[in-house]
Length: 222
Image 1 (cartoon, rainbow, N blue to C red):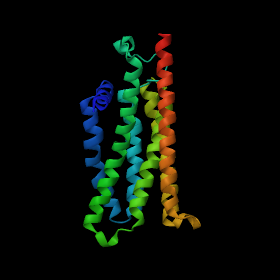
Image 2: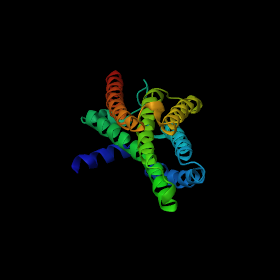
Image 3: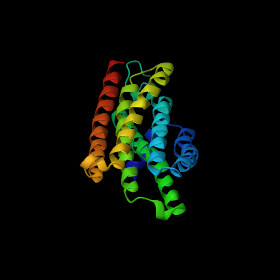
């Protein structure tokens, strides 16, 4: 609990309370009804489109708390003078990854639950597997892309490249949608869940190591 408290404190030094409310409460309140409308026609399509929009907002909004944190010239302020700066940054990055996973999990999970309650007889048993798979997939892609965009200090440049990068995520979501609808073309659809999970774990570790190493390197230079 003590370490969790330190992680939250470190994370909140970069992310404001209003930012967390916007990402964890306001955004689901907007996206879930939107997804449910599309899911009334096609469950898989509704989830795929919602997750693409969710990934776009996640990429775009990341500039507000961690704008250019791995870029040379990023201003850490008095944080870099602390004797615990290394553990502080590590705690902040871990907490950020946890928050992003929760942020990407809430809307599709709520949409699945509500859709199941509304139309229990029409829910395909593959849909929960698809939802879980696309959550891990989009977490992996957004986390990987954010690692690149955090080297950018300019807000305008960050905003301009977020849209084409989201198109990549949308294409991956469309491919996963195709694989599930057509039962992975003779490959069991269930196999994509462990693959996406393992991918998310690997990317989380790589991103954490890269981000912290870059931050520590920049601190030593200034």
